[in-house]
Length: 211
Length: 65
Image (cartoon, rainbow over all chains, first blue to last red; front, side, top):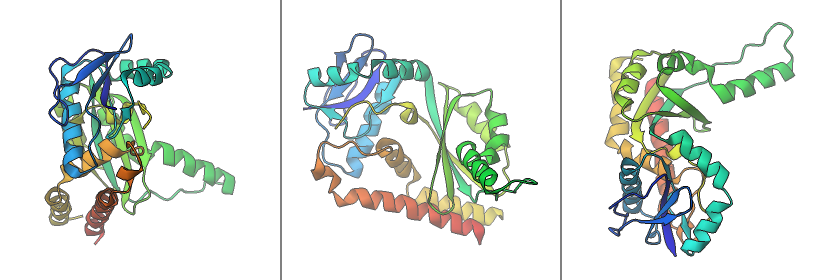
């Protein structure tokens, strides 16, 4: 069995895996699967080590799609077969993340109540709530401040009380300081935004291998 | 929200190792792809997620007080 760290645009020369092993590049004709030892049992240390290995790989290649902890395959052949079936999706994702990195925002607060427009019935309100859930318009001032820097955005709404959403932004590598400065200029009514990054593009990678 | 309350919320996030919470979210999110049921059974995984959830609630409660 082999463990998967990332799909990348090139072989990450001299990268070291989460268990100290050399990272090996499996040529998938057009991209590379970067693999190492099978994943260890889940632990905080194992998660940190996986993240560190992926981070190191991401720094060595132009485009890196991180694999989640535990991603594995029975053999090189099984992995290349699985990836080949998703070639179009992976190639597109690699193009999206090329030369880029991820910033993550956690948005804390309560969502604004939906105001019914004159004549708006339950259906209208429902659709408005759905639209609001997807786009989180409360963040529009932030989007405006970041528009020159953000290349792609993903939003996940959360059910936890107080944690409204996670927002994942793809930015050009090296732009994180400008990004953070821009975030700090924006005050959002009744919302607090915490930030982290830069990260490898965790939230812009398709699931790259079956367990 | 006063600066003092904001500072307290941020301090909780920092004290409880916010970087670990971010790593957990990024590395495990979208469903853990583990090599078998054995790993899913590890109690630590629930603990990690629970900690994340509780922590974020705490920060929020401080803000709203």
